[in-house]
Length: 459
Image (tube, rainbow, N blue to C red; front, side, top):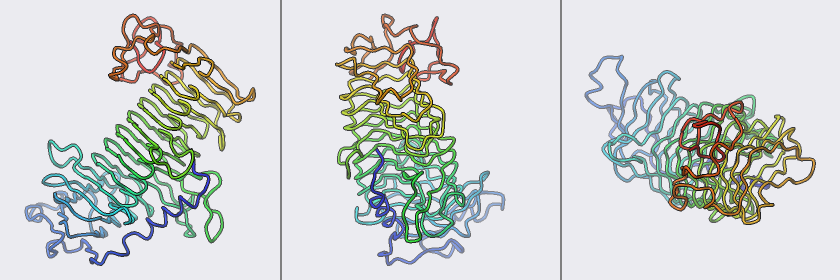
């Protein structure tokens, strides 16, 4: 759940803004890389034609790279081995020719203490890719170990991709992407939009705070600064997929201010909220204030709070999620700043949530839609809970039971959620194509038989 005290968030942001002032190493600007001992243009590339992409190699002694002179389409290689923190600033590609930062010769480990502001940071960068896929056979070619924020994409950074990175042992968030509003109007909503962000195929674990913290949490009320209350920037076209989050101090994934084009899908969140810095910061996935879009095909296991919490804009669709063994609610929905028409919960499988399956506090939403969900509760009356009669609800074709074995999964304890042919979920669902649900958790098209199946998986 959203932190009610913005100062905790502001302190984290201030730590990032003051990043690495303790560092005594000089900044290396990529203007004449051939003459630099720390940052060198590959000799072979220097002799190629002008149409070939420029390539640069960053040695372990380099702490800061100013990319003002790096051309669009360039490739920046980070050499294998252990090194300290790295700051990239003024890296500017184009939509057609982004700049790629990639490991070379093996795994690169960025290692620093949790008292340092960050281990990897971008500042005023646009159209770039950070990908740890440079060495065959190594899944996570970038290993980010430590820092108050492990990786932070801030100071007006936008249009980027982060992939194949392992982030762990951060004092606060694992991967953070946002520019906190300040008294500089360039940071305000309407002046800056963070857009076209893809965070995928990363492994984030053992963090002090959130695993992924994307966008600002205070969309409606804004952030208090010395020049008054200012509104955080929008996030547009955000994709968070195929990430593995484990043992995060607070939420595994938290998204805020993502007003359009947001999709959170195919992620695994295990054991979130192990050491929350404040009450209610222990959920699996948080679709926070100012966020619309889709949340689907995620596996959330063992949240001490709610499996998924939805505080979004009211154009939110959640489907094909597997939410297991939450100590709070499986899915909790609340309406705060919700100009949209609906929360839609379709074909989710929710098992053994201590307080209840789906809790709807969303009194301001014109309609809450709950269709084709499997909800297994020891007390079946807690399957779908409304805060009051003011919560408007359409509930259809949900399977509610007290024993998960009755669902006839192939191997529930082994996390094989395919259905046996004897499952009572088969062909008992409503047609949900009109809601945009046309496949299941495993990507199988719906329906596969005479009618739709209930729950996250189709027989």
